[in-house]
Length: 500
Image (cartoon, rainbow, N blue to C red):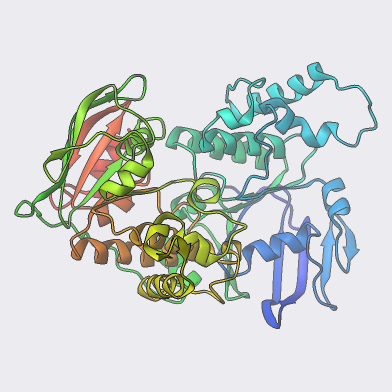
């Protein structure tokens, strides 16, 4: 982005400190944002990114001595009302939407509620929603309930809602995590247009290629401290990673031949109308099969069929050479198949429940004694998997929501490993997980494969399957259109096929 923004910051923070339970979440942090700038806040989960945003938006109050200046006015702290009235908008990672309400109602919510109007003007609500979606270049049925849409389109609704009204600053927390490449490209174009119109955009993303593509400057936080502010020009993904973590990561292809291993699952001609057609493949013991492709390619629907949540119209599934027919996911679990959903927040884990309860929920039969849960068996199972997967927790009784995204994902993996599966399906296992935690998760995947577990790794991020799978299938429009051995193809070859 060219330097056409003003020199005087639109927003400036100095001496930002905040403590939770005796732990300093932010220590002497400073931050500046200019009108018309796209600025990235980078850091691992737990580095203080969300805490800083919540201080800016008035959710948290910093310790005494903080200096905040916004649009020429000075504050010791800002309130949510002041921040919102000033045009500071946030798209949180958990979206904060209303599934039972329509798309239009979700988008226009902030413009309608609290206006003192007794009668609902549905025409105005629809007009606001359609205008916001048009700004994104997206067409959705605004009268349909939000719950009818997959997570990718719910993300678009959240973005559209944030852009309603006169925004001066828009914070985007992982806005592209569930978008296709074309949707991501469209969003980044919108971000550039917003910046060109004078809106300041703060972009938080674990997809570092996007960070470098869209940002003019990058503020890096580590363990609640400011590492520095850097121009995006000339920066590399590896350098950002090093600044964020204090470590270096050397990505290497892990692919190996598993042809001498027995076949665990064999899929032949599997089809489901309007979702996928004539899918055939095998996964062998200790093999990781990668499946990539844009959202809408049928990847998740295929996974859900293998897990018994959807029924195929044609084709067969064999497990250890024997045909299987699942009428429910419980049948699949009993047969030795586990499925980690891409939607960790609503499908993978129960946020209000404890870490321990989340971990054992899929394997209750293993901890029963006389028809009741045996506390010692439960504690033993939890302790084993917490230790084995290196989950960083306070106490097993703590709510799962108290953990970082990376540690939540480890618990979700542990939940399924506790069922002792033969096949583990990982659908977008690193959504919302930072770069350091991603490396840890893929180390776990490699270790599980080495132990003999058959794994299907699904991701729309080609590098994830390229570096961590033994073979890569490319799905497009419900069909397998390519099969790649990472040892014989470059990352660019596969990315060109998927995104080209």
